[in-house]
Image (tube, rainbow, N blue to C red; front, side):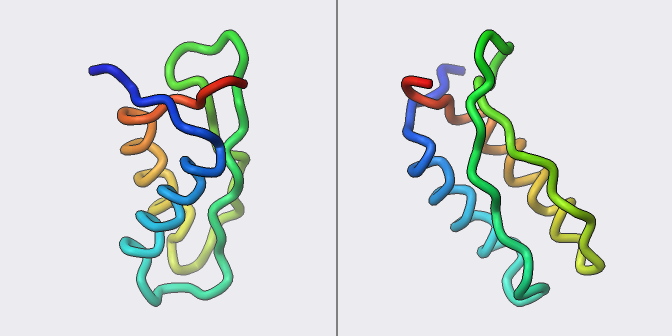
Length: 78
């Protein structure tokens, strides 16, 4: 599967939408961090910074959303 190239901002917006749709009203504190470019890394060429554990399990939901995004998107530029 070919990954679509998008900007960090576009990827962050997609992750935010998916996270909010998944997490709904579980937690009002957790936010999606800005993706970070990983030079020379195997696909995907980005990662999310570590997210602290949350009692509402937001960190687990965020990992699932990021895994879906990793299959679909690659950062343009770098």
